Image (cartoon, rainbow, N blue to C red; front, side, top):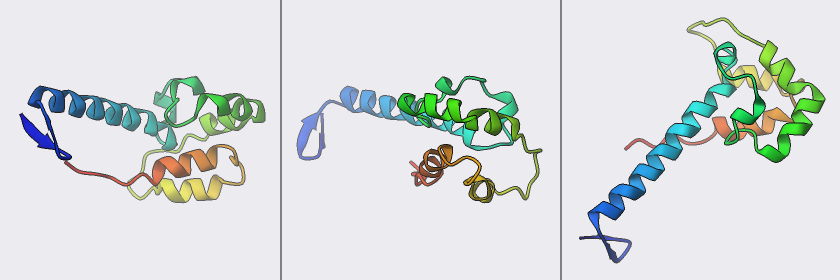
Length: 113
């Protein structure tokens, strides 16, 4: 037994909570690759494969506007000096529905364990 926020919990329970958190974080990291135009070609084609980045209720508007197609066709070659944030800032007028979603994803602070 250990104390967590003033209450006793088992180590097994704490371990299970950490595993759930780690699994969710890993899935977010996998889906966040859609933010990087250098990786677009290697990712699934369907917008619905990225629900943590593009909420299901926003998918149809993004698809209908043609933004998903434009984003998928905006493949950028790999380079060491490429800045993903600057790329998105430059694309915000062309991808106005996707930009706020991607902006939120790119602004998530990194927490190291």
